[in-house]
Image (cartoon, rainbow, N blue to C red):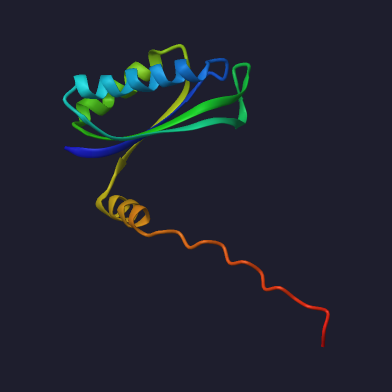
Length: 122
């Protein structure tokens, strides 16, 4: 099984509950094809780099999954046919990318340093 990441953009007119339903439906497509969903991240509404149809923004969703190449192709095909999906991008992750993602998750981020207080005394 290969590891993949798919990012897709849904129509901005969809409410948060509907976006959640669509994300769950996409995950079910992967599971129906014998794949395993690793992570789903809803990135929210963002402005598009260019207008797609009449949309200037969209709801972004990123999903990481394991599956066969046939399952990945089927997922991509079904997303292209879906009327609420503006764009999708499917990427097969290599071992180096997977290792970097795991390292980024395990490394805690350092809190921002507070500026030192200055006094008017010399």
